[in-house]
Image (cartoon, rainbow, N blue to C red; front, side, top):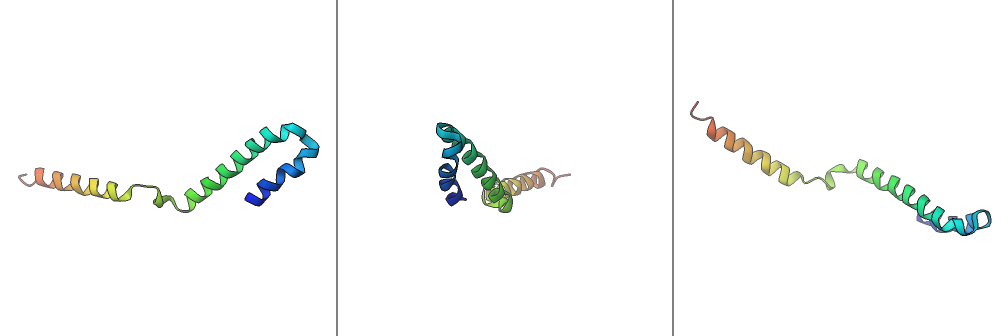
Length: 71
């Protein structure tokens, strides 16, 4: 994708002239955003704080169990 995005301005310059610059910003933003979304969908657990969530759930279960022992 990077090679495509680096060579695209060369192809668009004849058609768009100086409008190529903002056009490239828009095209790059959209394509890189789509790629990053795909990466996060493929591997969602690398960005989730699972360790902290598990520790909080374990702490809450222990507190709940301690409060309900007398019942």
